[in-house]
Image (cartoon, rainbow, N blue to C red; front, side, top):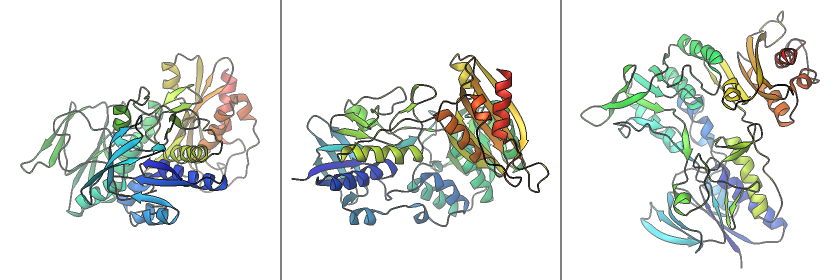
Length: 452
């Protein structure tokens, strides 16, 4: 008989795992019966593209979908949409689900279970947080809800939180013609960068017409007679709002796993081994898991589609009878706001201080091309290295067009545990239209090595 695999969550981690498990099992001569349930309406989509859909750069939700439910079904996966998993018994090997479209409740047995439930936006624990007109932006359904709200003319948007999603959504709202205020608890926007680089982000946002309010905590969401949000109250003032977007981060969606007694880490994410196994017969991948950070040498929750897809492929390979390992992460990410590109990998200076590491931190200013070549733009690189070994601990980049993807060089150096001296002497490509003769990354590495 076929072995039944039940997948909870039909986005990147879950469907990558399901598809890879079928491929691997087929090659090994095994027969799998795969069922996937998801409470939403979409499968295998790019949540990272939602702000660009709302801004108008992407034409439709469908453009963000890599594979539809019908395409998954054609590949042998029984996909059941608008179907929510509500209870899990790992001892008995079943999941209770509710088909909201049919109004039917049933228990689905399994031999192998994949939990890929993703993450949910964090809502401030203050009065009015559940008011109409307040949106997290985590799924295509969320993005559609925002666009439906904006179909009625709106004038004022408040974005709570100035992280990746907060910045991207602030820009999207500006481009839709709204007056935008961003409220954040930190001293500068983008708290994944050190504050000295965050000041550049702050200035770029203000140049775009965004009102940036820092070191401010939300105390309440004010509402009108119809129950819809009208303002965001903070300890620094009150800001009128016709729509509010939450950019306050996400938490692992692991309530079902917690109730079933599965092992969770401090962040609330599921704890897996490097094969993506949780316990015998239960696997997990994506935004609902914690991941091993190769620089911190600790478990972290970093919800990114890049990790979800890789973890799903590793999971599916192992579940299907093959062998694969997920080797961890180094904390690499990038985004843009206005015409400014932002990127980071590894530890910031603040992280190194918090970890009690003896380190040096250097910051350099350079240009994206040779200074004499037309189109050369400013770039700032900040680099952190451990003392006395010189091992690279992290890097941050803020600059104009052509800046952010340079972070990949630093990420590979981190992955390979290079010293800043070694990074300074790596053989990187050079031509005036692309770089100065010393690439900005190498200038920063050389300066750090000199400081050591």
